[in-house]
Length: 96
Image (cartoon, rainbow, N blue to C red; front, side, top):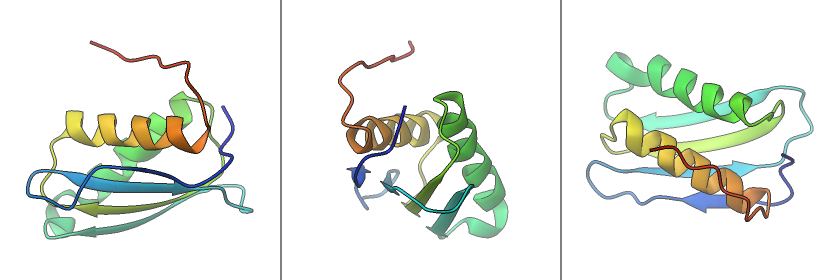
């Protein structure tokens, strides 16, 4: 999968996360995270986003995430949705 444009998903409502994924010239996944719980869960949120992107073959991306208390399944759903939008893909591989 290749990131072709900016992809967005989520809101800044309570218990949600807003994810914006952009193409990057760097050879790494860079994450800018804003969260009220960054001290407790910041590293976990970043690691989860990176794990999801790498599982889809992404090696280079810029991600901006604004967390409002989202749980892991919400973070995963928003990250995948933003990624599919950024890749202009309609071949969804959702998990149950």
